Length: 417
Image (cartoon, rainbow, N blue to C red; front, side, top):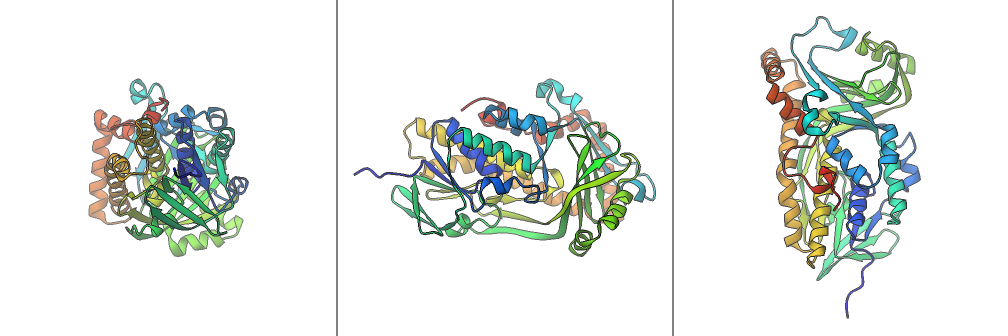
């Protein structure tokens, strides 16, 4: 007797990467099923996730291709320029200006990006709302609140046992539940990585003066300090500090936090007023030792968690979704078993190099720039100035950050599966 399944692919984790994968699979004719401990409505609350993410223009193309344009475009802020500065402190706190900086401008790569910006800034809660709407329209089955308790693999199928005792089966299970992935632990895949002894302090601020679509990143001894443009002349502040300093900022009164904030910002954006709560997130590097096991794959932060210094963490997960969905849809169309190791190996080969190289690059940047060693400061300053003077190098970095380099899956090129 032929085995019956609850879905073609069970995805544990209905976050941004997991929901994107579900929409991509559905667009290619497969039936996904999402499992998440938190219902969509709770994920949309302003207090659930105060972060905003830099979205590469290739990742944005994927969402447009999946039918989310109406939900994402009103809340997406184009990043037209990025100014990177090495200094002792930004804004009014800087004791003296630094001659070392990098400037990226979207106009330089307009011919190869079809007029796209360097990327988009979008609040995570807006992205989650767009994905929730898309999942609803596509009539994708969502089990929430529900949590995976165990994963068992047998011949031809994987079984997911939920904490409430229910059992769901599919040819393939994907773990996309973040760094603490239960699916990853269940299949015995270990991780490598380390704590950076840094915390990201995140807040949204209203700016007195317009930001003109310019993102600022200052490399400071304690870690990067970023002012990232949002719609309505707001900005997402990502303030990297040691754990004790970050805890003090989190616990500070609104008046004290504002005083510290204004000293950091300086005068070029005028008054900066905090809107909503202040969030803190510990920063670390974590890489899964492999991306799959028999009938189980890993995606997004379950596979790789990197420092936000380059703003590429979510984009890695969205690239995973584009590559994995293409591999699975093509395999299904050829009549292959989508949960077989031969199919999952294609996904791993496609994504391993990019994931490891990006993790290594962010780790090097974090260690190189989060210190006040005068020799390293001089070396990195000279390097930044050199890149700034070499047009082809600048354009390569911009195209790469925009997700336009390498062997791109169809969705990242704006093509349907």
